[in-house]
Image 1 (spheres, one colour):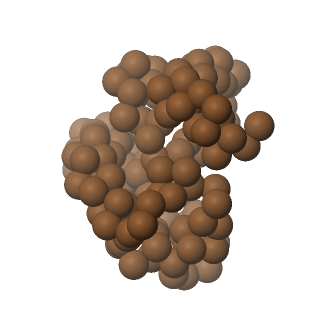
Image 2 (tube, rainbow, N blue to C red):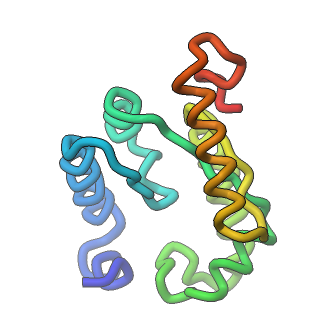
Length: 141
């Protein structure tokens, strides 16, 4: 089933419950890159599991960048199926960004080649892992 179908048939709470179980199982699978959806880390248990078993990285992006990306795949975002998706996204960001800011690292996502963002992620991750007590470690910067 698609995410939209799960939301429609079972609701967001059921989707989020299943999402949390899958993330917990995947975190037990060893080293990997696990990209969650924006709502996944709103679950405190999921954040705790990620903190215990991995490094969290928030790919922060400006609203206009997010809207351009979302408009390419509107149907994949059931929470944005509203009369004003930009206003809905703005509201979600107001609620979520304080939680996102708890991530171990933050990298600014923007309209540049993916390789540039990947390089910035790798640099930030290397600094985080190799420099205990560095300004980047644990402050969400």
